[in-house]
Amino acid sequence: MFISVTGSGKVKREMVEDIANFSLNHLAPRLVNKVEVDIKLIRDLRGKEELSGDCIWEDSSYRPREFIMRVDSSQPIQAMLETVAHEMVHVKQFAKGELKDLSREVNLCKWHGSIVKCNVVNYYDLPWEIEAHGRERGLFIRWFEQSRWKNCKWAQY
Image (cartoon, rainbow, N blue to C red; front, side, top):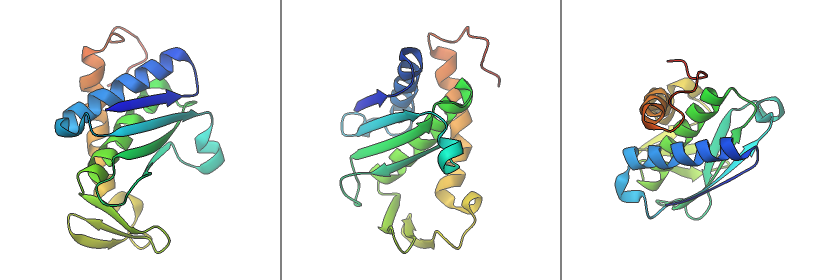
């Protein structure tokens, strides 16, 4: 797996790269050497676009291997790292073919073989978001407990 992180400061970039690697290793170990993720840390992404982070494939809609992730670097550190873990769940979903964009303009997706009208279903009811939100905290906690930052006081769980 190749992960590159740009933006923000050196320590945040190191943490983001570390949790991204950890997350994919736990979510899809067979994809570790097959996926490229370019993570861009952007200050005040929430204020500019009303989102904490997003992730999109760059190469092919069928089991893509190249992704661009954007994460709001002005969030508290734990929230930023949980956002990275959340978006890495989406990387896994796309790369394993669990989630497919059928048409970016018409808002049709396929989740485990079933078509979902993304613009009709509430964000929190989308099955891929249920999985990502459900796993982000656990991935963060497992990463944090084994990380070199485990003695930092900023983590709360």
